[in-house]
Length: 157
Image: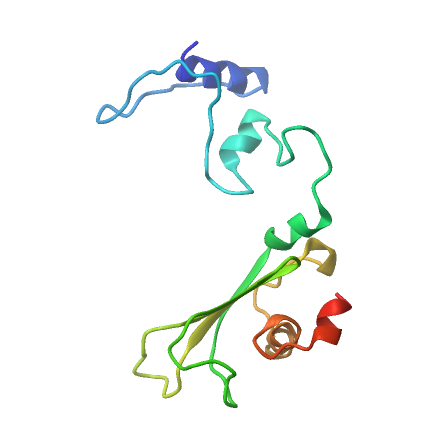
């Protein structure tokens, strides 16, 4: 069965009305496959429409640490006090329970200090990641997971 026919049947079985499917004339071809995969993220529209869940393929429980990479806070910041890493350097801190990334951004005319983009994973048990996180919240993440993080704070999360 062609991939096109597969998706058409899948959409119809889900109650959708298929009004048309057309291949991309520039680089389209038909291939018979045993598996079809997509890499469009954990909130994949393609996977949702196809009814494919986000789970271990063998049906096993996913380790509790797996949830740490399902939500991220991304913020552009300047540091008021000296930061604990070399200027202009990318810092990536990985642990079994979190990922923390600091990346220097190109200089901006309107900002005198170095601007950094920080990315921190947020476990779903902490609630949804904030759309516009406060300075206090970002500082708490730096204290918990950043370059000068406190092990006792980290252990309690």
